[in-house]
Image (cartoon, rainbow, N blue to C red):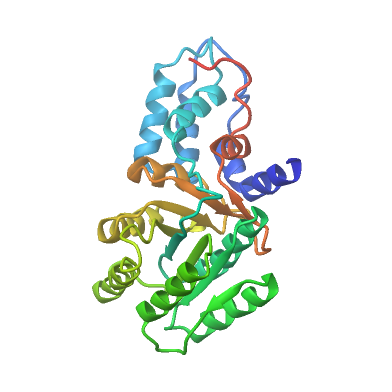
Amino acid sequence: MFEVFKKIKDGFVNTHKKLWAGLLNPFRKSESFASETLEQLEANLYGADFGPEVVEKIMQQVKNSDPKCCSLLQVVRLTLEAMLHDSEGTLPLAIQQPQVVLLLGVNGVGKTTTAAKLAHYLQTQNEKVLLGSCDTFRAAADQQLKRWAEQLHIECVRSHQGADAAAVAHDTCQAGVHRNYNWILLDTAGRLHNKTHLVEELKKIIRVVKKFQDNFPQHKWLVVDGSLGTNSITQAKVFHEAVGLTGMIVTKLDGTSKGGAIVGIHDQLKLPIYFIGLGEACDDLQKFSYASYLDAIIGSSNGSSTC
């Protein structure tokens, strides 16, 4: 458990530094919060990419709090706890019906690697996993997923470059249902969220897999690059409107200074966050825990649960 928390803490080390830079004794209670301190905190929150809506909520809570009862750190942490209390996604493990996960997002966020890491995680939970290589646009993606599948000893349904992505999704679901897989993971091509024809292809994939069971895919998870900060919110909004997202995975958080974007994304879309990616190894995909996240970027609240 300590090793897992260390990975999370290391992943957000620069966010932690950015958040508390230039602030003296944020852990100490005092007669008042100096105006210079408040200005520095606000600048730091923006620098850590919490986004304007989240920054405004935090600063308002700080101004309404009694500094004799709560330190600056406690106020910030408790405010974020309230915003993230429903942010953790929960996986339905050990059930009979296959769970179909559609992984989507823009180019370069790490969907293919994330698909493999997710498959590995489910393996560790004794789940039977099938991969579908639906990124038929980029030959490298198919080869990459093939290598991962061979390394992890997981079956992967594939086709040739330029094939119909929906057809690959169909074949994957057909195999998954007939062979009693617990999880069917569909990796899709990276697409710009503002390219209508590519978003329409996603809708086609969804229509095709629904032919097996009306509730397929049960999970439509957006993979976002955490190092992009609040830019990810725009992507998430467009995909959510197009296909109705059910959750998110935030990748590339190994050392980022923009980890505050997690709060902004959840605050605006109210989507559960299932996993965070903290590195390149297959076990670097960790289940999201808002308590561990706050411990890493802020530190323990050390006491009172109210301010």
